[in-house]
Image (cartoon, rainbow, N blue to C red; front, top):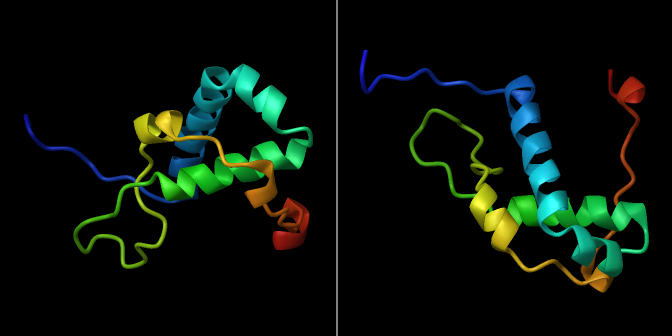
Length: 99
């Protein structure tokens, strides 16, 4: 079936891709991240901010909620790291509180 492919979605599918992107981002910007972000939460929020701002828009109608976009690792790695002063700490619920 040349030219045919399946479509995957959902958090389980996305988790491995985002984890790989995070590992690549940390490795690519290792020293700059270490020097720029004194607090661990700043690294998390910098990554979260960049992954959102560098995503590509979703085309078509397959996903009714097109807020997030498609992961663009090349754009993520090339993006300038945000200033620590631009980052906001967002307290999140623990996993056991969500379920």
